[in-house]
Picture (cartoon, rainbow, N blue to C red):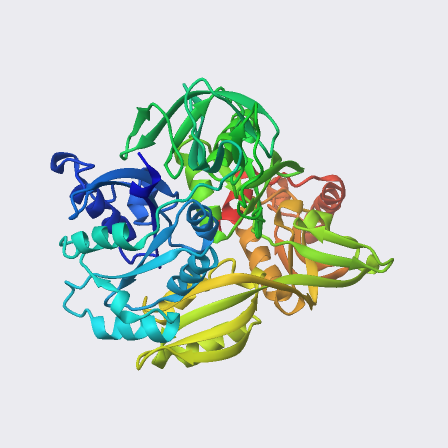
Length: 596
């Protein structure tokens, strides 16, 4: 199809504002899907996405739409995630589009991620069509949503299209607006083919299937193409698009979106954001998106050590489908062979673990998440540390810097005090507050990334009864009093439980870990000491008492000194046992503590 009749757009919004429902409705209205095949959350392919009602992967789909002017247009939609951890998916999808539908919930108004996604789209110079969704709700407030559009995002309110994706109201207006307002794709004018690889997945029969957007030239089967980043050449076997199931086409031309399969066997050959060009007459690189850096690290180990090789291949396949996930091999005394994995945030970590369990049937255990610290040594060197095991000795450290994030928290007016208390409890500082409307404010604050890892998002939701929302962006590094907390069992350090914490919180953390270990380590014939230590200083301690074997049973009657003699003999034996005895902590105990 000629590029004047092609429109590429994506749908962006805060989590749960109705992106996926709107994309279902567009597919239905354009006749891409027959009514009998229609189901909710159609583009969410994973069970995990359907269960949680979130979108994790961007899904491309091609629709044919006959506009009111009688012409037929090819509309390429990329449905994107809304959660803060998957912002890289959004930015990648936006680089393949010319326009974006910005969906706003009529009842909730502009939220934290609406603002972040709007700025992402504006940075890519996309044409933005605001859509006010859920107007059928009894508590929908359309005038207020229009006002917030102007005040918070500086978007003219008359551009907004009111709709209800659930009831199918305003869908025709949205389709017409896409045709009229979104500019058609323009060729880059390069000498030959230029296509952006914006996603990929692994198919057992076809190998690596790459999602592409063609910016210049055309791509068809039998052609030799080159991936500029890896420098490798492959022959294209098949090209096609999605509706939403894949179907083959003769070729993909300038402006079109679809997929290609070539004889690519290894997931690592395809780099997301790479430029695909003609191998015989290569063109220059497209301005892709920047390399993504993980912010949270955690160790993942197979519960059964024999599953190590299977876990390794599962991770390679998962990495292809999720370019922000990184991993490297590591070993632990307690847990054996495993991997040190990097994630974008906590939801990302949770999703990857869940996908390994479900899609690849792996039994895994993850260690406590940590972030990347900059450790400046006394000799002037700087070392990046993401694993407590690599933390240098205290005597060699000059100072430690930890990563900060700029967090935007939107909450109802009555919860400001509680949210500020939560931020200061997490060692953060509120920079400034903005009033969004009569009911809500936005707090901008600087918080250490380490502190928001575990329960920050949940605490915001519980304080605001679900009305609060948060978004964050990476900030700079800041000097901080971070220490390595070691857990010692019978004076032997246990590397699986080590962590890097702020000195003010080390004692509390050490005490809770020691109590948990006391519960799960089985009693032995001798006394076991569990200690939390910072360097040589013990900050918390627990004792597991020994089994007592009743050696006085054979002593019937007689003088008390005979009993004492036997007990003293036993005491000596236990003392010797303690000095040479090993505490074997069962795998289940590690798993219990790490789960907690």
